[in-house]
Image 1 (cartoon, rainbow, N blue to C red):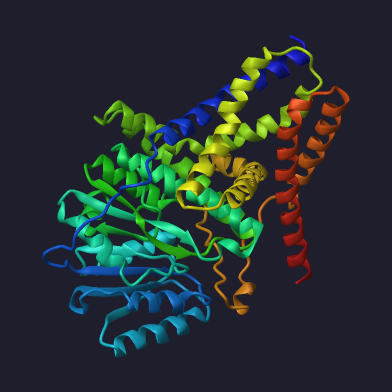
Image 2: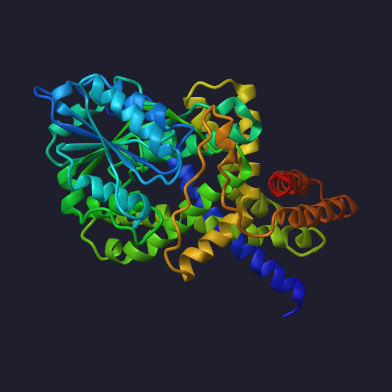
Length: 475
């Protein structure tokens, strides 16, 4: 078979697989209803709640989250605050001082420390759980700033005895800091506004997001507790709990603001862990899910969810092929090409636009942020493909904390772990520059918007990555 035929065959296989991802998004858009949601009345008797704050070298935000926990409007005799501090720097002194202030105000608050950092965040949560007196356990990462009404708004759901977890929606306090943070926020909104809402409303499995949620302690224990054999302990426990018969509730109209990574290195570090961890959970649990007695629709959605990051290697492979395809004359009919591209590409724009529209964002802001979000996703395909392959073929790996900066200039000394060749995405941008030149030469006008989008995504992420790496080298 000649090279052109091999390229074309591979191209259409990749597009067909991406088309499946796109059709899944279309299904979610059709099922999506933003109005209505999980609301509840106050319980007759308030249960005891343990608020866990896992912290590791978070000097910029540790005091703030501890104070927010202390401001939660809940009966004092029913509230316990555990600060699970694994820190090795000056954060320890900050934590001790902030917790002492809560105790002086009459709150039951204590610092829980352990020898070593075995199991990372999962290990800290498990260690704290062993002494937690709460029937319910609420978890906040260090950069979250829950409203004082958070517990009162969610605890009522646990009146139903089989409810094991209630998840609130994330908001993004530094959303407007840059184009990068707006794009990240748009991507996250797709998950929290559409994916969680549709899965919850359809009675499908969805996941606890590691923070801004409340667990029934018994659900954690009976589902096997926190495991640290994957990098996404929250996703792992979520599926084990739902397989064990616990029901999850999503409350999208209760939210907690937090910080999205302000620079590309921190964002890559975060996304790498999430992507690798989800692949690890898929390897660990998909067999159990498929052979369980769950309905077929639950199994299919779990399969789509846990293998969702497979889209990144497909996008990267498509990126390698697109500029080459431009000059090949043979191909499918134009109508078929348009349909496949609409399903695999336009569906992504529509998905994120729907999420932004549900949040009430203006048309101009939606257009700019959605284009930026899609371009960012394309540019991240190099780093994320590596994470997916690492999840498939390597061990658990280290849980790398995403640096939190808050408003402290001193916190800028926290650096994200850098992996891979900085700016490698610029090579793909150059490849697409050549593809654009070929499209102009062969008058393939319809391909130009797609080529330009891929060029912009790779150029943007590559330039940000190289710039960050050079600044750190000079520092």
